[in-house]
Length: 482
Image 1 (tube, rainbow, N blue to C red):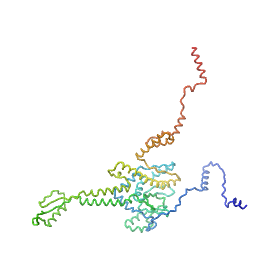
Image 2: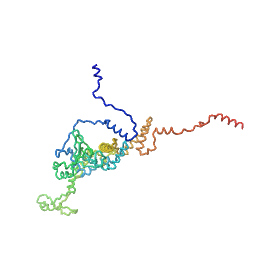
Image 3: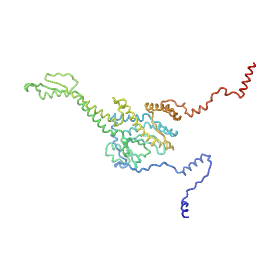
Image 4: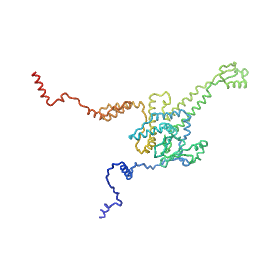
């Protein structure tokens, strides 16, 4: 008895009973009450969030305290290079032009969500702000975009913030806690006195919550929340290139004119037979050479011998080094030399370089796309109570890639045993690649239905009467009698 009682004994707390009272709700207010009741009584099912155990290394600034983690690069130095070196600025602009030039399109299964995001992009002029935002990310390693408005409301505009004055704070697991920006008065203290950084107080900073900014780090290494960008890894090459250029210009300045060597007097067989000028005479003639003007005609006596000194082509000694450093810069930045106007590049090599550069651009677009979708568009949709996903699709493909895809679609359509649905999709994609109108195209199912609905052609004799044979015999007899 004890065995069965232990197996079949009642639990200490029985589950709450659920009463079932069927009703027909023909009133909207009653229906809303029912939905609200269900929402309050039904537990919400949330997606499980990963509970990470790994910790990240944080390099927190000691002075001032609570400002955030220290920058991994000197962003001011990078900004000075962008401002003063046109070549480096042009390389960064090439990346931005190829990444943002085609523009973006928004695609979503939820038409309402897509319309909301399209209106937001247009109202906030997001496309105009993306260029300086991406330029900060590529050059300084971090782009900061402020998102205006409260968390529960729609984003009220966007603004790019100078990332060199922003500092990130994370917890030990690497989750973002806040972003701190130094105010203008604090910046003036630091600019006038570099040691004033230690005297920055809370009144000199602005704190942003995680949902108030969209961070775009680029080229991150290790646990740092900041990226290194594309300029800092090439600083050594940039300094070497600048050094070679300065030394080349210095020598060209010194040796730009053709030096003149003047020999005064005349050498004889013995010293007594030689004509040796005095030191004062040599110095006086030397002073005339120091202050040369546009005079090209010289008149001297037979005891003055003037010759030019040829040092050879001085610029040629530096040209190969400058060219080498320039090619190394292109390799370091991963930009094709043909885009920067470099000549003597084989067509096949230039094509391979452009294909590699397009893949590089795709990776940059992927980084921007993740931030747009996860940090910006998600907040806009959540403020409207929508949980749909809006996909960012980058603009038009290159003509060469379109032609390759069109050729592939033609080969697919030639397959003898292709599925009709697949054939229809291939035809649609081919028409889109070629820019053809697709409004009048029909699917195989629609074509089959249309054929069934069409009236069948009339077969001769199919509509004759049942007494056709008797009528035919009767008519024949009449003709015979006649």
